Every structure is written in C-alpha cells, then in structure tokens.
Length: 373
Ligand code: SF4
Ligand code: SF4
Image (tube, rainbow, N blue to C red; front, side, top):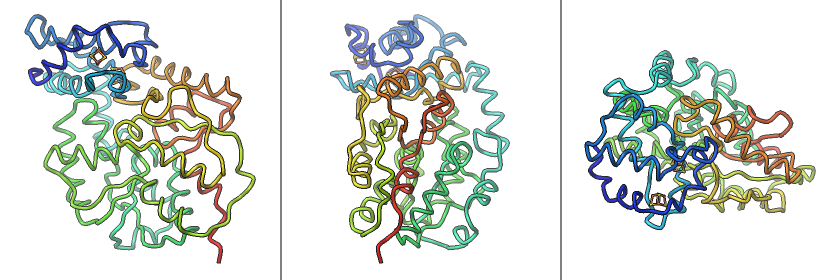
C-alpha cells in the first residue's frame, strides 16, 4: 500500500523535523506524533509491516489538514497528504476509519453533498431562472459549501457579471452540486468515483467551467484526470476568468471601499493552484492599495483549520487553528478579512464575532459600481 512512498518516508525518518513549526495540527494539538515527521515515523513502521493497520492508526491518518504547509518547508519537496490518503482509503475499505467518517458518509448520501440539503433548490432561491435556462458554453460551478454556507457569494458573482456586462455565463443546473472533494479527501474513494462519473457526464459538454472554490477547481481539473474522468473543457478559477474583464473594461469604483483589509491565502488556491499574486492584484486594482499581509502568507500561508476532513474528526482543534490564525488580524487592528474559499469564509466567520469576513468576489462586487457608458 505504501511502498511507492518509501523514499519520502526515509527522508522524513532521518530529517531534523524541519517542517514541524509549519504544521498547524502539530502546533495546535502540541503532539509530535501528529507532525509530518511523527506521522511518517509511524506510517513507515506500517509500511515495513512492523505494526498493523488498526483503528488507532487509521485515526492518526486523519490528523492532517492536507494543507501542504510542510511541503513548502521541505528541501525534498515531500508531499505528506498523498501518503495519508492511501492510509485513509485502506482504513475506509476495511471499516477502520473513525466513526465521524462513516457518519459523514451517511449524511452525504442523502443529497450527494456534505450538508444533507437540496442545494439545487437553494441555488434556485438565490438566482433568477434565466441563469438556469441558458444552454451556455461557459458555466459557473458554485460549490456545495458556497451554496450552503456563504450563498451571498453566488449572488455577488452574478451581480458582478451583470455590472461587467458578462452575459454568457449560466449556472450549473444539476441536482448534484458537490465535486466530491470531501469524499476523496476523507478516503471514501469508491463513493468519489461514483459521484465523479455522474458529474463527468454532466460537465463534459461545457467549454469552460468557472468556480470560486479552489478545492473544486483542483478536484475537477486535476483529481478527475487521475480517475480517467478528465474534463475536455477548461476548468478555471473565478479570478482567472475575471482578470481580463477587470483590466480592460472601464468601470466606476466606490471610493468608500478603501478600508484597511487583510488577505488570507487559502491552501488550495495558493499551494495547490499556485494563485498567489492574482488575488492581490485584483484587490489593488479596485482599491488602489495592496492588502495587509499575515506573517505567513502566499505559499507559506497557514490553513484556516477546515481542510482535509480534519474538522470532521477533530472539531475543537480545527476551530482552535482558525482562532489562532485570527489573532494576528486582531493584533493588527484590521476589521475586514478577505479570502477566497467557502470553507475558509465559513470557518473564520464561525470563529470570530466582530470581524467582517468576505469572499474576494463579494469585495470586488462591493467595490465596483458599474461600467462607464
Ligand atoms: S516533510 Fe520534509 S521537512 Fe518535513 S519531516 Fe519530512 S523530510 Fe523533513
Ligand atoms: S499537510 Fe498540513 S496538516 Fe498535514 S502534515 Fe503537512 S503541515 Fe501538517
């Protein structure tokens, strides 16, 4: 099961734990066994057959946000999440995964999303019917978490399209509104394959798929390929899609939006999709200012605590990770935090009462009045 990772694991075994301080799980839980080094020590023993895969070891494999912060600190570029995914898949297949994971799966199966809700109906309550009836070549894929937890982003995206005179984008109109990221992340591989196959047949007719959820873009663009469901059309982030319009169209800006703000890089946008400068450029373009930075930003960003099913199996610690991240915003006396991932928006809102947490698209929409005629 883990033989393909033997070299990586040996590097970790003899490493002086260079990435330990970058790991939010190890630092927050204060347990070296949960650090990348600690995880690889134990899983190397599993690889060599010195210890069995039991429920305790299965639970250990969920002590990771899959944030890849360790990779940026590692001189070998070691990627820890794929190792843990292998163990999670095996744990799920052998029914050894933590009970929270099987509970999650039961909930997921009710409406094919993690929220057990009819999200297509909710989407229809957010947007006018014209966006569902268009038969377009370009589609906006909202993401289940955006519809469930920050629906204003869907509304703001289409309002911004209207302001910029972008009239050819429809909304994804299918009953399944989840790309399957939570399934594959949690090791539920067979369920992911079933879902990805259905989504693939629904999505393959579009020339361009636009999403404001970095985890969805990565899953649809990269993970689907690994399972032979590579989509023929382009899958792009909302920033990639909007950039030419925002730079080339002459529009009016609201001056009142020039407030002090910080930008948080989501792990999937900065480290998985390498999109670091574009969000900052867009903020500067509409406000005239660069956003204030966290000490750990760009490709060295810290996770909000919501990633990789960690919030399902380690709820309290995952909230504590978010609160620690937000301490810096309070210290810098900033009242607006802008980011671009529905999981980060939800996590930060949940863990801060007084902070204004906005998705970048909502910020852009609030900043732009309309196109100059
Ligand atoms: S991931 Fe890299 S830096 Fe971290 S313990 Fe392994 S070898 Fe060391
Ligand atoms: S991916 Fe993130 S949470 Fe997982 S071991 Fe690396 S730093 Fe820690």
